[in-house]
Amino acid sequence: MALPGENTKFYETPNHPYQGERISEESDLVSRYGLKNKEELWRAQSELRNFRREARRLLGRTEAVSGDEFVSRLQRIGVLSEQESLDDVLSLDVTDVLERRLQTVVYREGLANTVGQARQFISHGHVTVDGSRVTEPSYKVEVSEEDAIAFDERSDLTDELHPARAGAQE
Image (cartoon, rainbow, N blue to C red):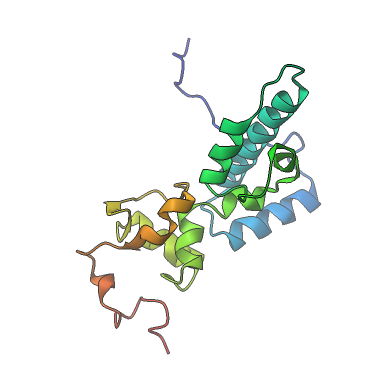
């Protein structure tokens, strides 16, 4: 018998594995966000599913329970904007979750030429968040941390003329 937390997956696989339309949509998302494999996409979809489940649970309550903590958590990680509320959680898309990954944020900030290069920079330890080296491309970047993303001071990539830097290939 497996111990709690041992060999447990953090995602659910699709119920019907061979649907052409779903496969092509997944492949498009995997390439657009530079994911390693579909497992990373399924993990993001499961995370979104859990957000929606929690929002439905909070909306269905008859007592005067507000989901302020839940909404503020989603706003802190940037999945919801400041103006959005608990109702808006149900209309979220998987791309909203994928946009908050460190890999995507590094690419959007212009520190890498492609999302694949952003993934490589992160996994090789060239990127810091708030001064701490982060080597997980799937790290969820909080809104407050967005401006604190930079190259590690010990990295060769701090030199703006480095050939791998964004814009250096002109």
